[in-house]
Length: 370
Image (tube, rainbow, N blue to C red; front, side, top):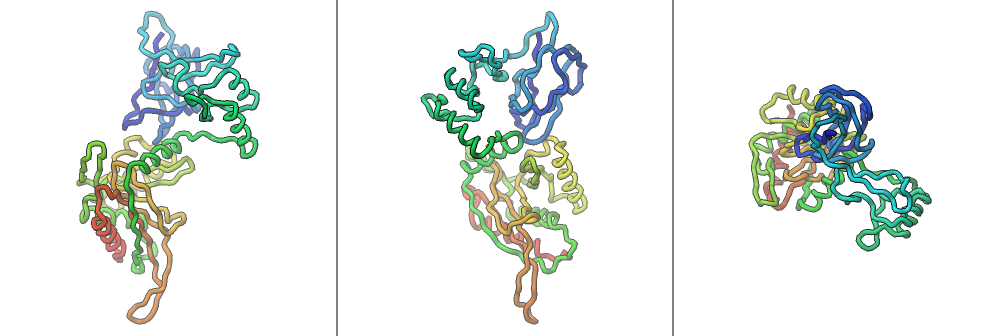
């Protein structure tokens, strides 16, 4: 038998979630035929068959998380080298007919992801319809106790079923925890008068241009900081991450080299990456390598924000909802429109002065009439 493992999906992606199998055991497949769709933190990827053959077994169900190098399926055939890892399994000591619990590709038996519980506790969980995979054990060595199972049953009865984070939202939760633990973040806010804008101005396009200009004046904010090695790298090219809100979670595709592109080209690039994100067809490489980020949450609601910086970047600019305010002019009072801005920066490597000058440069560019 020959095992086919999850291939390297590139861009540091080490895991994926099974979305849909397009084949089943016993099917005959040809090289290049789509056999499986998986969801990474960045996109839905179709996995092709690596060879012609007959499928002997498929490892994992929809919703299962698999890692690079773990077996996906097994081909029938004699005299083929076994190139995969045996899929671990365990059976309950109290019920040998219990459904086998697979730990895909794991060398452990039962494996680090299989809940630790005695046969009696497993029986209690079945009776109360509790999924042990969603419980953190409070007993010795994180053993699941009867109290843990009964508490989970009460919560489900009172509040409904809990849903495990998957795909983009699971990755988002993990990344936000990393950012919170690592970055020393400070946020400064200000408002810029956009009274001289034409009514049809493209807000995002103006912000992209302003960030590009500010990066040239204060280049330290367009940089990566490697805290493990204590190195700071200022980057000449401005590759701008654009936060895009979707029902599946937050995506941050990258608009490349914004300093060297014409406004129409940037607008086409924005439209293209947003469409790809919406269709979940954006290539993983287009979600990596940003040097600074823009979050234009003001298109929905909110005047000021506290944007989160994703390492190794050191800065993110947030733009809030445009509002009107009365200002004093040479001829009296007038109603002007204002755009609120929030700049978060990593204070480990960026000074308050650098951040303030960067925000001032953004504001000056945004306030221009054209």
